[in-house]
Image 1 (tube, rainbow, N blue to C red):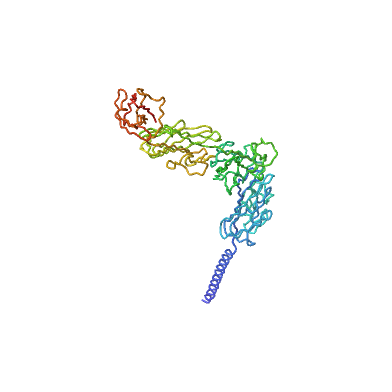
Image 2 (tube, rainbow, N blue to C red; image 1 turned 90 degrees about the vertical axis):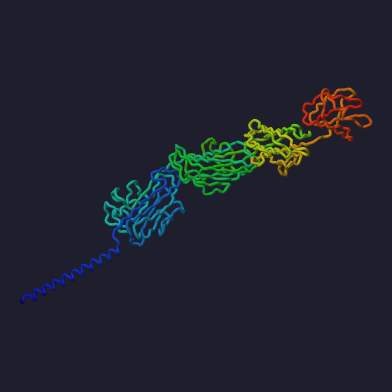
Length: 605
């Protein structure tokens, strides 16, 4: 029993010791967790540098390579210096000033090589990027290296704890497994198998062989007219025999005097930043050996005479090294639109091409003849035939195509038919406007249309107007449109201010409807008993001599041999003429007997 207190004391002491140990363990666990939260453990940083064109491409000197550097962390970081160092270095290439762009918070010093960038700590797993351009030098290869958190040798330690150097992803080693990149910052670790903190790209260097050709529509050397369109297709090529890919290739088109720019259409892989005439500036992203890029430029001719030039250039400043730098066009003197001044043979393939067009071209006129002629008087029911002749004068230097021809049927006329001549079609033959089209009219050639109408008016004047190219859609030297002889506004006449005596694009005819007063000419002088031809068909004037009394009877004139004339007579005493009307009698064509004291002469109008 005396031993129980002792045992109780021992148990109590042991219990207290266990409690103390437990409390210490709990305290240590919380401390360690706090320490772990305050001091992150090892993370894995990696860097990758990519390029466009891709690494391994052979580049032409002077070309541009675009680089993207991507830094990745698998967790938050706490860099010893407050930020993480990224070094970017180049060999046989020059940093393109002003080209660097970076993720938020990154600052870079591009004043020299290597380019030094400071990255803020990662707050969680993620990536940060830096992009920039570099111009290819003349030597090979072109290297670009990126190292994150240097030093990156076998024993070095960076600003971020990435754990023990070992063959796994948690390390500070830095060799690139693909290229020997010691000149741009590669490490010296002993393996090439593990992902690391360094990456490198390599490009070969060889010359490009750029040429520029230009095709025009209408074709080079032809004649164009004022207001017409010319479409140029520029093709920049890198010869199949070249070894180097050309990048950021400038393509320039110079619009010459007398031309106005209409549009610019870049082909695939081409952008045009400046489309303000006279110089159109475009850029092809890259042209590999054997490939080409195109730009289409459309213009409108505003010159009225002379020549219009257009010049196109690839790599106008010779920034891209190539085997052939000759630039002159062998066919035209094109200095006003950008031609070079080299002295090499003009037959050499080169970087420049020029097209030339002569401005001149079309000179359209229209003339119209009528049958009966304009001097004749027509009657109600008579037929008039108009012949329209459209010509492109011999002095013209271009063929007119799709030439509109219009005939305007005036009041008092009823349309009967339209007959197009060779090379002409008439799509609309509904009066009052007859619409026809000549497919083409070469210089010195002409096309015709025949229009037939019937006179429906009973008096007054009937007009018919004809016009070529009424909307002035075809530019020509002479756009004058008014008829020089009469006012024909009722049948489509223009309102130009040109000289009325000028050959023009409009013509008009006029006929008087009703009886005229012809002057009878009895030759030979008729004598009593003489037989005269009297083709009575329609309305005729009969001149009568009936002695001093000035009187005459209808009976004295009413007989043609074998025919009884059913006629109405009227005597004009002032002219001593009989007017005879034979309605609907086209069969009267016989002999008239001259009676006593009367001499009668028929006068056909």
